[in-house]
Length: 374
Image (cartoon, rainbow, N blue to C red; front, side, top):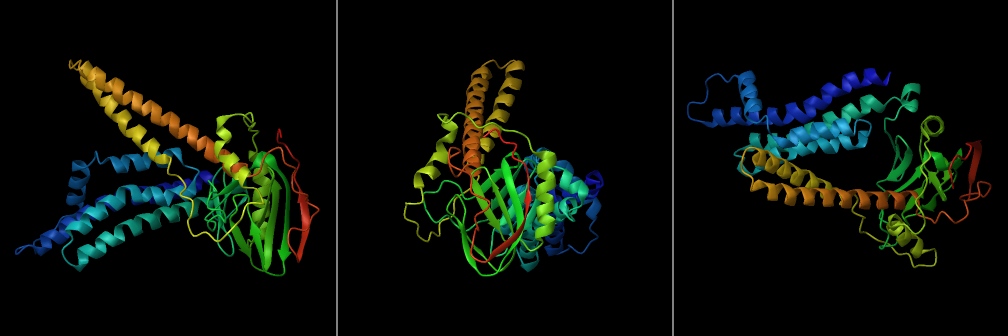
């Protein structure tokens, strides 16, 4: 059961998000004491760790990291990155004041250990891919030969870590297909190298070997995966169990702004090698700003009820900024997500599954009924 996997993963997450940063502070105190002229006296690690934890129990990066884990309990790809939130600042400050090789090694190792423990927790939850994992919303990460990564998420498939888009004006560096819009899945083999271009104009080299072909939402993917049977079974079963209709907004909606940038590129636009990757997730800075200003607004409300009525203006000011940036974050995030899922216009024809995608392709098709509203 996935629940039992989480019983193993949660302690690893607590070690990564909580124990590692406070353990770093404890070891730093030990190394500092040892560097003193009379620093050979016994050092109580447990007492020092408890003191550091009690003194810095308001260290907000740890709290935010734990909250993010609770919110993103299914998104295993995010867990290692969240682990860097509490560990990286402590390690960076330690590097600025490090004296000696031991302190330097400690500062370098701290974020690596935190990242590794969170990565291990993600592996515990998602691998091996058993029946309960296929039916659950837990994200499963599958590497592609030649670069790129398939993320089988709760409601959609996402391909990221692709080479930079061939067209520098492409607004997204990833592509996605919702489960409710998948119309055709088949496993096959590619016998000769080939180039495959995704809807965002990124090109992936398909090396000879097994590959998975997926058609849906106006897109066609050819994914070079080694364990193609396991991947196909995961995609098909999760699509049947987790597909949820998500009607697209009207075509005149502003949410299509990012997607229309891709449509305007068109096949006639010149493509050339591009080394500049699309910076994904920069709009999340707006969410961080919203959270910080919301905390300031909350403090202002507390002071206002404590008798300092002048803080009412601070509550209104910071509350307005928090609300505005939160709305901007949600709006831009929705537009980017829509572009990832619709790099081609919904009014265009679906790719023909009878067409051979690349020279030397052979397959055994498996059909999945279309459930999309479009």
